[in-house]
Length: 322
Ligand code: ASP
Image 1 (cartoon, rainbow, N blue to C red):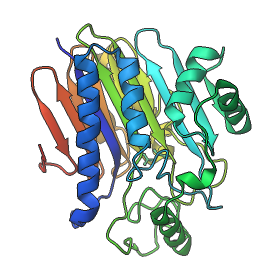
Image 2: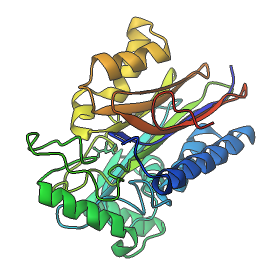
Image 3: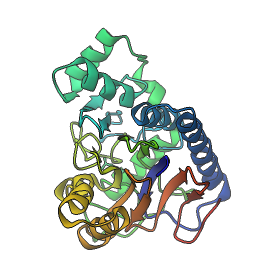
Image 4: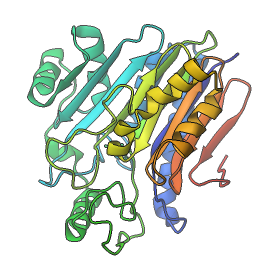
């Protein structure tokens, strides 16, 4: 039994034609964030701190759909959401509808630790952020030129989407690849376990391109986008509505608990047998230090490492970068 960590930068229909100038910065970001997480685990940082640290790093990188780089609502605004869960204590925290908070995952942790509640949203969450003195900025900080273009294309196609080939609405519409071949950016998440079997999970997102103002996805919903208990920690990505319906993160833990499946069997069962194709990906670790990174989309930006020296950064199947 040793430590293990896995992180993702979103699942979706990631074209293999993704140009190097679009692919490489994300690979670099995954490598950097994996390194940050591995160093923290090696320094005996508790997994809850590790997942918060790594997700904060990912939120600060505009190549991913969380924090700076969050995709836009149908009003051209950002509404960020995140959650975090500690497997040991089953304590968890979640936030939605953030427009000015730099690191949503850290506010979720404060909800978990400083309030009698689990989930704060919109004005109440922003007010709580002010009270706690977390870093807040003008909401224009989060809006990138790429996301203005993504929203424009989504509006033209009348779609709500994680990308341009997996429409949620108007499935009959012709697919419209993003002009620069970069149609996919994703939610971020991290799961970690230490050598004592302590587990934690965190997930953060801007949601879906062209989502309705007020829409809440799976990311902040405990048991859907994020879950951790004494058996495993799970962070999901993909179409929030499918992930919520499938209680994806909790189902992985439930299959281990009630059916005695291994982490990998449970993750594969949820992703390949219980969730519609093209809708979900997840990263998970078990108390024994196993890693699962399953997805039923074309690809998933992902990275993992274990104490015994295994390390991987990948986007598509059999396209291992490291
Ligand atoms: N699951 C996120 C949502 O539906 C999107 C993503 O994972 O990219 O809000």
